[in-house]
Image 1 (tube, rainbow, N blue to C red):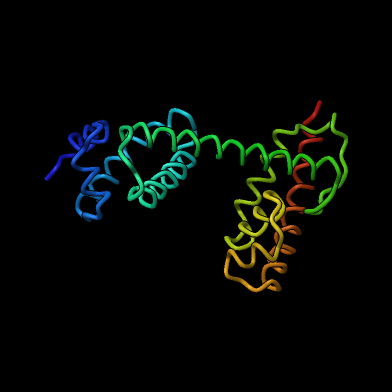
Image 2 (cartoon, one colour):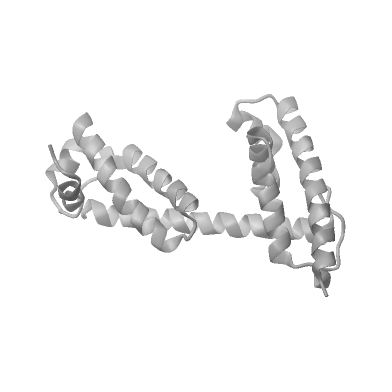
Length: 200
């Protein structure tokens, strides 16, 4: 049985028996490898991302790619180097997604478009707090409504695409989107009033 410390060390070897056995489908080796990789990847993610939950999400995405791509790993470099590049790519993707969501929400607040926002004086609104209020409101929605809202209004997907991805009917998806927008709109208006009231 390989200990966790030994497994982590084997990740850094150019010709690692653990990596070789795992890539050939050995279930025990694969389990040990994923456990070791998780520890290493999570440490890298926490250096780049402050929020531990977000770092955990990135870690899970990297491990999923490791599991999927491992049979194609040729061993031209150490597995740890390969994993580090994947982790950096996922971290970059995480921040790109955050920036995209922030720009979309700022645009909604600026123009008064869906989800039910009203035009506001940009000089009288703390944008960071307003954006945070929208994203927190989206996270507080029921899971389906939250997913549909974020995929359509924040990521720019079409409702029909979201319906296919979530395995829902288009009618159900559009209904969830309508309810989510209405609730978000109510919370945004409330947040805007509170933000203005807080100003000196």
